[in-house]
Length: 55
Image 1 (cartoon, rainbow, N blue to C red):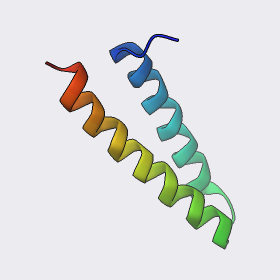
Image 2: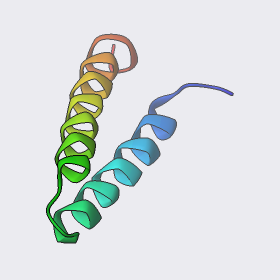
Image 3: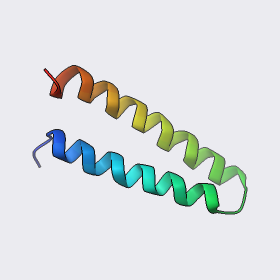
C-alpha cells in the first residue's frame, strides 16, 4: 500500500463520515469512546500529513 496524500484524504473522509454517523447513534459509553478515538486519529493523520506529505 502506498501512503500518499490521496490515501490520507480518503481515510479522513471515511473517518469524518463515520464520526457523523456516530453522532446520530444512540448515546452510550461505546459511542463516546469511538467518537473520541476517531477525533484523535483525525488529529494525528492531519499532523502526519502536514509534516510529511505537504512538503
